[in-house]
Length: 439
Image 1 (cartoon, rainbow, N blue to C red):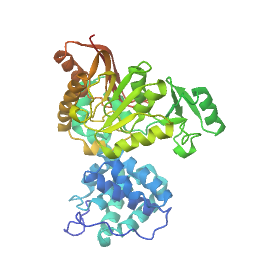
Image 2: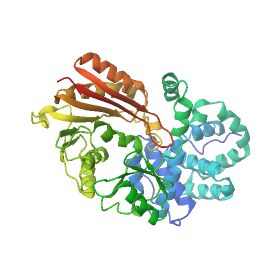
Image 3: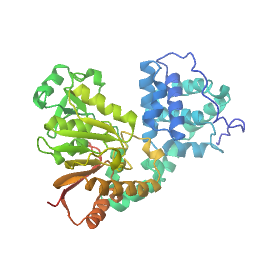
Image 4: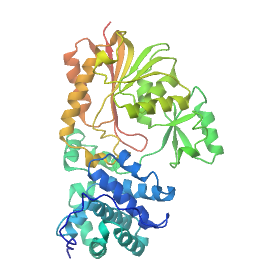
């Protein structure tokens, strides 16, 4: 049965109504909060920005709402496919759409709580748009429960709904990785691991592992400086986090400082440094003269905050790295980290809103920006110096193809090393190319 939406008036321009007096630990409140975050993402806000709308809510409600929000976004296309088969017309109210998606996610992942999910979703709908969509929400969810088995077969036959990625994204993965694209997709749809980077200026990996064990937190070593936690925890639970003993950083991201590995006392540029994880890792590894740039002033403040927590120091400037007149003093650098803007297709499990916000046309736009940045940064590198080109993308157009084109433009450049990490259990997706300028 198809359910018609209630009325024909759109409510997308209305301001959110005040939050209801729902219990802080109620499913209804978490569904309502998640619906509001999902509505903001559907309107073009990043998930990071959208989640700020929860800042004043009870912690228990924030946590539950985040769980629902991330679950819905990781299942890109799944809920929308179901709604498309249950409704004769799409929902025109973004928050109600988000509420339906959140409720479908909970029904699928918590089938033992079916009656409560339906009841609480309807209660939450009563607080949106004057309650005009309560009947719609109730009817759609009950239709889903009746048709769930038949919908499973329909979903399996639809790539976007079953694989939970945009079709254009899947097509690019198939072309680039004909033998591995399914494993990439599967990894993208999972929750990412929580990996720590130990500040070895302050403590060894072994000693910090012992501190975790004493705090009843299970972990195992990963890479040169990392520890993989068995279960994710709040940073508040990490021994010595606020004293700068450890940072949260994916194992793939930790490869940047390990690969560039500038010699002590080198003059180093981190060209797109925010939020400062790679900058900090470089400074943890050696005594360096580091300049950290970022074009975004608010994100640049996060570099300063991270370095202060870790008791490290670097020069920090708000600047476009391609606008040399506004930041470069004329002195070339021994080493440059060019962690360039990209599609972020390798870290989508951490930022699942990318599946909604990214467009295929963005790849070409990013490629143009990356090309311009490479050429500009190469001009401020010393003869014999090394530049590490880095992305958190899995698309070759932003990675190996970008470097191939650069080497044609710059015959004095030598590719020392190239590495494409694909998303898996122990790391996100990253690309690195280490280049050296001829002396």
